[in-house]
Image (cartoon, rainbow, N blue to C red; front, top):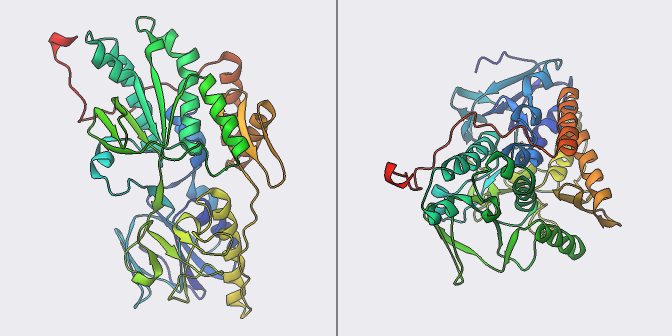
Length: 434
């Protein structure tokens, strides 16, 4: 990897997400050599991926170069690579570009989409955890309409205009709201030769309410907002299969759709090499103690979505969200400094600052520790929090200007097919059908 020798102990961080960058910032110019590894050279602000997928924002406005974050840090290095395995005996990581010894290892690999073992759904549906995946969704949505204007067969045309979102957590709810607004104000102008009123947005939820991690008040408000926007909500329904055209469920309900977006669950993006006792197999998360140390190791830590710190209040580990990741990264940075100074580490205690979701223009729900509200004010709170959380002044300015323009013009100018995406599993129409 061409990392120079150093008199300082080496901390290797795998992952440049919320947790990894929070830790990196805490270790800035400390008495460590820090090596940050990631398979992308940028940090992604994942809460706004759905806006890239629906043309509200361009990809560059929610991404920030990792090297720019660390360029003023001393004895700090970034390498673009994927880690294949951890050799815990020899204290080194094995990556695509070579091996690297560590004194302290921090796993902050985040999470990936959980298909619960269903390979056909995984093969035929779309997920939205990365910028490339969001761009694929954007292209597929627009390509569906471009194809629909050519189709004479009404059943095929309807399948192209039916969208099924599986999972009604924040991602599913926000994406459903964004698609509904596109249907209401944009697509009918872009495609005057299509009957856009026939476009369907189906939100399928295996539980008895949307946003089930939020309060019932917020859940009810979000559901009302979605219904008013024309989204069809199917509760207590579990998708069992999707062959690229037909969606089957555990009930008599079926859908014919060219586009299924899977937001029904996440699992840890694990790295091979740890002991079995350190892993929770069903969700691929890593067991850690109150100091974020991986169970069974003293110098290996895990933070963020990949880590499961089981406590009486959070018996399944902390929620796989940005706030726990940021807080764990910050505290671990302090604890590594304390370790180097021979001091005792501080135990992690999660400060739940609340949760929120937006359902579209002037519509959002916010749960704070002591207050719960929804509507226009909640929407402004949502925008403010997300705006200030972006990295870089330029990104903040670009996102703000885009939001202001979209609000005034009721438009989304990012509906561009920059990188075409074709689903192999859906029908390729012949000249006789168009």
